[in-house]
Structure formats: C-alpha cells, structure tokens
Length: 181
Ligand code: SAM
Image 1 (cartoon, helix red, strand yellow):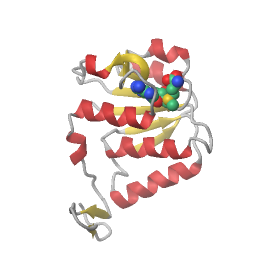
Image 2 (spheres, rainbow, N blue to C red; image 1 turned 135 degrees about the vertical axis):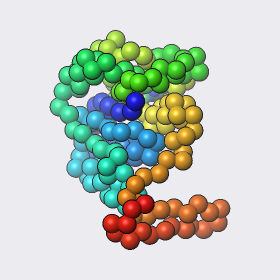
Image 3 (cartoon, rainbow, N blue to C red; image 1 turned 90 degrees about the vertical axis):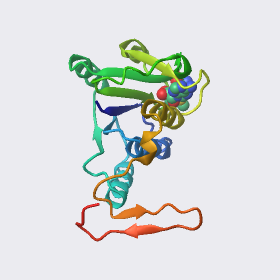
Image 4 (cartoon, helix red, strand yellow; image 1 turned 45 degrees about the horizontal axis):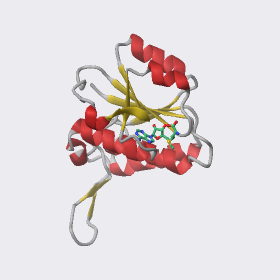
C-alpha cells in the first residue's frame, strides 16, 4: 500500500510556491509520487535538488499528466482508492482511516476550484475540519493522522546530507558521494 498525490489545477506563477511545498510535504511524509497536471520547470528542479541533497530520488517522484480523468478511471480499474481532501467532506475526526488496507491510495488536492466530478468519482471526500484553509495543511494533517506520526521519523536512502538533530545550532553530516546511507 502506498500513497500517491494528485495535485489539480496549478495556476502558473501564482501557485508555484504552494505547489513546491505540496511536493515537498508529499516527499517528506512518505508519499510515493505526486501527479501534477502542469507546472513550471523550476518546481521540478527544486524538488530534484532536494532529493539529490536529502535523498529520496528512488523513493519519490513527480509525474506530469495531461488527463486527470483517465488517471482517476485507471486508478479505479486497478482497484485503488481515491480520497479527495475537501472542506465539504466528512470531517477527519469522524471518519475512520481504517481503510489503510492493501489498496494504493490516490489523495486528490486542489489549487483552486476542483471540478465537480471529482467529488463523485472519489471513494471518500475527507475534510480536515470543515473550514477553508490550505492544501498543504490538509495534506500534512491527513498524512499525520494516517501514518499516526510515523512519517515524522522517515529518512531517505542515498542522502548527501543528514541532519543530526540538536536543540541548539545546526548540525549536518555530509556523506561522501556514492556511500550508502
Ligand atoms: N473553495 C475551494 C474548494 O472548492 O475546495 C478551496 C480551495 S483551497 C485554496 C485548495 C485546496 O485545499 C482544496 O482543493 C482542498 O484540497 C484543500 N483544502 C482546503 N481546505 C480544506 C479542508 N478544510 N479540508 C480538506 N482540504 C482542504
């Protein structure tokens, strides 16, 4: 079982920073891949650089897709589960996340208004509180609830840099190229 993210409706320039953060949260908190409909090349470069420095090139990826509807229908055909994060859904407080079964999960998040069909195509519409806020916050809180905090200890293979957690100052271990982490 793996979690994949579909980011719908990126608006060029205006959403660049948010989309980058959505991708970084997806990587950091254990998602396998993020599908995006359209993005500026600088977002791809930023995420690539983070994976090169902090690891994860083999564990996390971005795929640009042109037709989100066919992704949703092929996901269903492959018996995957589609979870749409939206303020209109069932509050995560009242929704069991015990569907963490063997199915791959596609988490759908929007940038602006999400097409109506997504609400009916999704197996579940889940709200992280029923107030409007942010896809970055919704994604992070969903993943934290889903993984029950385990995602916070996630580390990546082949990292060039590794943080040595410290309560004062910054300590980073630099690994030699090619040396396994
Ligand atoms: N009015 C928009 C809508 O139709 O949902 C809000 C867009 S919001 C800026 C961008 C994305 O953040 C939404 O598509 C949704 O995925 C996520 N989001 C915002 N508030 C949320 C909430 N309370 N629960 C879950 N997801 C939320």
